Image 1: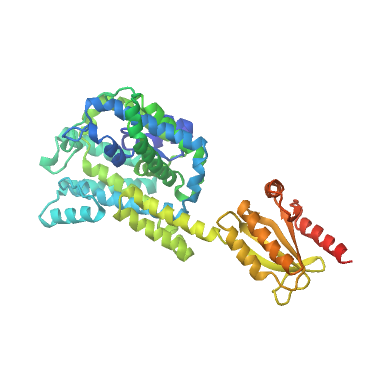
Image 2 (image 1 turned 90 degrees about the vertical axis):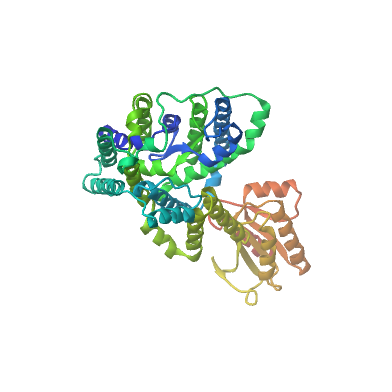
Length: 516
């Protein structure tokens, strides 16, 4: 196992771990096997806007603000994890996660077109703008053949290596090989192969930093941005950790991400969240343990101090090729087709999230999909299932209001919370036969009953008594029994027992005795 972990870590070392001081902490404290962390860029830039220079870089007086923002984002995540916030992740449907991942995969692939084709830097604000600008440059004769060849070669090496020998670090080999050629041959944009140094300066050494500030005004001003970073980061974490149907312990995942930010605040780190691309790279490398991300992060340390010239010589086309393969791996066509064919609702959520992710700001894709999923849950969860039964020997058989006898059972299933209490009363009133004198409400399969349900059942009791009948409650959960007692309710109650239908049979015996 250790040999494989080393293969995986080295395969992703240069491509997965650059730029994040919180990776080791996340890996040690509960990150998923192929979940990697990265900065939540746009929200961070918006929060730190007052501290940016004219060149877009953070001024030295903003380092303390950055550390404060990172610290607050971590603390909010930790509080949310242990306050039960992880349960909210369960409201994100699998189709939304799949649609978001596929949409992000398309975006990542498209965003590599300028590097992969050797074009000038494209700064499109959306998918359409990106494609339009790439097309304009190509139509004007843009594009460099050496860059295109390196991109195609990198894709071929990674795909062939993955198929022939999955444990072989093909991605690392392709990038390092292209880098060494560019470094020793002196290749750059002027010679047809743009490298990292053509677009950005690559400093060496640990990034400058400062301790978090305790300024109340700064902390108050960062509450909103820090909460937004924590929320979006948690959403991205859910996508990465639950990819492919995995069911990790989200409380530990969120807490680990919070601890990563907590430590990162004292180590010159940006607020970190799950990285879709680097998590996908870990999975591409066959990560089977959190040690893969941890080792990849450790490898970054010597690169920070001694590898700046190597990083500066990285061909952008080679990096684009690796990310092309990564993006393709994020689009699981078989899983998407299965969801599309499953139902109109599942397919609809998948499609809406997929399109939203590609056309709107990234975070809105999952927010819209999750919002629609929650709306559907609330809309369908407010209508409990009600079935009219009557005794037939030792069995309970379905019946209709017109055919029912003197004794009937109304079986209630599903949620009966405050939003469903009105539906419960309406449905029960619709099936109660006027001729029945003994009406038993079986609540063995009812959930979340509160005071609103009590009022609905008491209203039903008044109606039945008006017809000279009697209402019995059977299978009543212990917490609802306690609520009924505390409210001095006049309802006739038989508590729930673990034996199926035992409480209903107990009420039927009482009715039989009363009739005798």
